[in-house]
Structure formats: structure tokens, C-alpha cells
Length: 489
Ligand SMILES: Cc1cc2nc3c(=O)[nH]c(=O)nc-3n(C[C@H](O)[C@H](O)[C@H](O)COP(=O)(O)OP(=O)(O)OC[C@H]3O[C@@H](n4cnc5c(N)ncnc54)[C@H](O)[C@@H]3O)c2cc1C
Image (cartoon, rainbow, N blue to C red; front, side, top):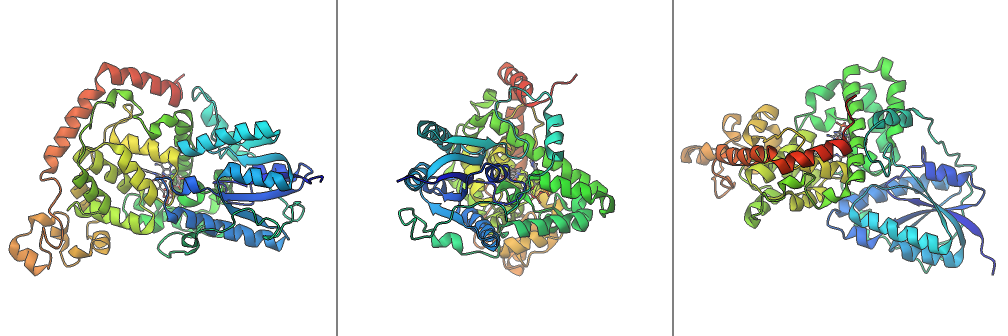
């Protein structure tokens, strides 16, 4: 039997229908396409991911499906390993070419892509991969990187005419050999998390550019105000509901009537950082497992599971740390400064190595983006070598960014009756105050997991600064600067 020649557009973390190079190029190729998303069991069970991520993906796919249906098309959503799916599809169709974005992901997806490249080569299938945002593969250094970021972001978007798109028709019955059963848990939305999909992404972008950007700079460091003052676009960028080009071009178009040009400029520079950090990871993916600067390999060799559990579960006895952890676990979001503080508390004050902690937070962050996550985690842990060492004092962070304690009381209800003056250091309450404010330390709310922040600060600071001056760290710094930082002319 002659099989129909088809292309496959393989959606990964690019869940949108516009400014989508794979979809656009497949639509120009002459063959009809199958639009495919694969829920891969190995990725679903990977320790970086949580069902919150797959619910976001499901919501995004549902919206794409509705849009496609209006044009008479259908997205094929399956749940199986990638190679297995392509093997089964090739029994039904002659797969000529596969179109996808190139993913800068965790080791598992990188190896999956290597395996698929071998499979496609063996089967004579062409695989057209397109860069994600402005991230480039195979860079040796950053010369000219900024210029090319600007060029890519300013270049025309690849608009797909959905009416003229030729999509292969199929019925669920005709594909019964494919597993199309998606776990129920992914389909049950939770109002505490942001909802996936292009329309919510655009709604947030519009409200940010036309209104909310005026609060951006003032609210960025405070965990409560940041929830509305920051763009909140991160999960939509991570999962590709919007491309960075779409965001920047929309913003530039409306820049002249924006309520805060300063806010938009700060925001735009962060979109550049997004690609910068992902590029770092693209060039040095081993930082998923190893210190970026190998000169720090012999520090933090002891482990304390009890302290780690206290951090992970938000019961360290430090209200700002616990509020931040509980809030990110419940909502999937935390602003930059407080993410940095959580890492600092783990790696500096508790002096625990970063890998376990980075997995835990990856599962919590709805916007988990491996490139940003690992680079930032190591920056905050002080294992980059080239960055300033920052050791945050969680009491000071609480006093500075939640002076009245609204955020803390929301997430640590044990402290709800404690007045602001005592809230940030509740262990200092007298027995009488503990009774008065209905919070017995050690019973209702934990004793602090470390007894003196000054001692833990000194310990971390002296080791990190002396390491920073060592020949191994300096040697590694030269290598890191050469690879990841633009040379000064
Ligand atoms: C330890 C740690 C881990 C982090 N992990 C992630 C992650 O997995 N995914 C993620 O998107 N961000 C991560 N960040 C960066 C930052 O905290 C979030 O991007 C930001 O809080 C998301 O909120 P927003 O979209 O409202 O950001 P906005 O301030 O509105 O910024 C707009 C966009 O710029 C990018 N951006 C903002 N800040 C940074 C930054 N410091 N570095 C790189 N890009 C940035 C993001 O794409 C963000 O959506 C991490 C930061 C730290 C300290």
C-alpha cells in the first residue's frame, strides 16, 4: 500500500500557533502536516517536573486545539515515548520531514533529541530544527551575541495562515494503536496556578504594557506586590505560549504611549537576560550536575537531611523563608529576589549543596526553565566564581520587603496574630507574648533551624571569599569569562 507523504510538526515547549518557525516552514513545504504533541512518560516522571507543569501544557494544548478546530484542523496529542510514537506513525504515513524548535533542556531531553536524530537519520526522515528565541547552538564564545539577539528579535514574525495550512485528517479510531489517554490529573486545573495558553499570555502582556509596568520597578523585590507588578509572563515564555520576539515587538509598538518607559526598559533588559542565561546552559549543560566553577568542588561536602527537609517544607522557623517556600509550593510563583533568598538560605546559612534544592524548586516553579534555573541557582549559591557573593539575611529581607508582614501572615498562618514588630524574629517573643499571640515557638511554629545568622553568614562568607582567591577558581574564572561573557574591545 502506498502511504501518503506527510510532515510532522513536533510541538515541545513552543505551544503557540503564531511566530512559529516549524509550523510556518512545514506549511510552505507542499506536504500536509500532522501537528503533534507528545506527553513523554520519561519526562513526566523526571524529578524536575510536577503535574502542575503538565496541567499548564494541557491547558495550552486545549486552547490550540480549539483554535485549530475553527479552521477544520486537529492536533494529535499522545502519551508515549517519542521514538515509539514516530515508529507507529511511520506505519501509517510516509514521514518525509519533521519540523520542531531546538530545545535547550535538561540532559534527558538532550539525549532524547540525540536518539531521535539517529532514528530520523536511519529512517531517511529530514529533521528541520529552528532556534528557540535567540539561543544559538555550537557557540564558542559570545562575540557578536548581543547584536544577533537584537537582529533576531527585530526580524519579522513568521505568521501562519491557518486557513491555508494543510493538516492530515485522522480520527481517534484510526490511530487506536497510539496511546491518546492523558492522565486525568493533568486535566484538572487548579485556580492557584496561572492558566496556560496564548490568550492568557496576551492578556498579561497587554495589561503589563498598558498599565502594570508603572509598578514594575517599585514592586519587583517584594513577594506580595511582585505578583501584580511584574509581568508574570515567565511560564508563558518557558512553555512557548509567546515568543520573546512577539513580546518585544508588541512592547516596542506601544512604547510611546506606555505609562512607564522606565518600567518597560527594565523589563526588556530581562528578556535579554532570559536568552543570555539559556545560552549559558546551551553552551555548558553540565551545570545541571556540576559546579560551573570547578574550583568550588570541595566545599559543602556534608549533608543534613533534617535541615534540608525543614527548608523544603517551609518550616525553618524563619518566617520569610517559610512564607516564600509555602507560597511557591502552593502557587508555582515567586519573585526573583525571594528565589535568590531561598537559595542563599539553603546554600549559605544551612551550608547544603545546591543540586537537591534545585530539583525541589524546579518542581515548584511553574516557569521552570533549565537554562535560567541552573545558572541562577549556581549564581546565588556562589559556585559561578565570576559573580559577587550575595548572602541574604532572611530577617532583613522580611523587614525590607514585607515590613507589615502581610505576605508572611498569608502563608504562615501560625503567625497570624503576631504583630509586625515581632513577626520577623518570633523566637525573640517572651513566653507571655507567645501566649498572648497564640504562637508557642517549638509547638505552633518551629524553633529556628539555625541558632545564629551571624555565625552562618561568617562561615559561608569566609569559605567562599577564600576560595574565590584560590588559583583553581581564578583559572576557571578565565575559562568562564571567555566562553560566556562578551570580550571587552
Ligand atoms: C534561583 C533562581 C531560579 C530561577 N529560575 C527561573 C526559571 O526556572 N524560569 C524563569 O523563567 N526564571 C527563573 N528565575 C528568574 C526570575 O526569578 C523569574 O524569571 C521571574 O521572577 C519571573 O517573573 P516575571 O515573569 O513576572 O518576571 P519579569 O520581571 O516580568 O521579567 C520578564 C521576563 O524576563 C525573564 N527574566 C526575569 N528575570 C530574569 C533573570 N533574573 N534571569 C533570567 N531571565 C529573567 C523571564 O523570562 C521573565 O518572565 C530564577 C531566579 C532565581 C534566583
